[in-house]
Image (cartoon, rainbow, N blue to C red; front, side, top):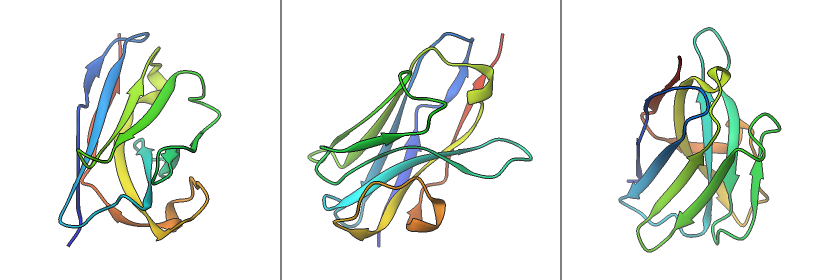
Length: 126
């Protein structure tokens, strides 16, 4: 069975950087897109970024475009989210998830992902 585990969250000041990791085990995700999502208290889960199985195609939410970078290393079965120039609005629990189907166009819709990690907390505060 597929297992996704996020790591790398923590407390950082505005303008700082964090690098999140999502590692898959159990089954291969090489042909699946992987997405990063976040959820702040009292708010709905929102898509942040996603990457295709090959890593050739990516997508970003408008709020993070130019600040965040998603990449993957299929040898390590890991997808990364590099977050720069962090803002207080970036605070939340960050989740990675696997697309429900292979050979699918990038999507930031939560209902198009089937397996989810446990999440890692990111707090941006002065």
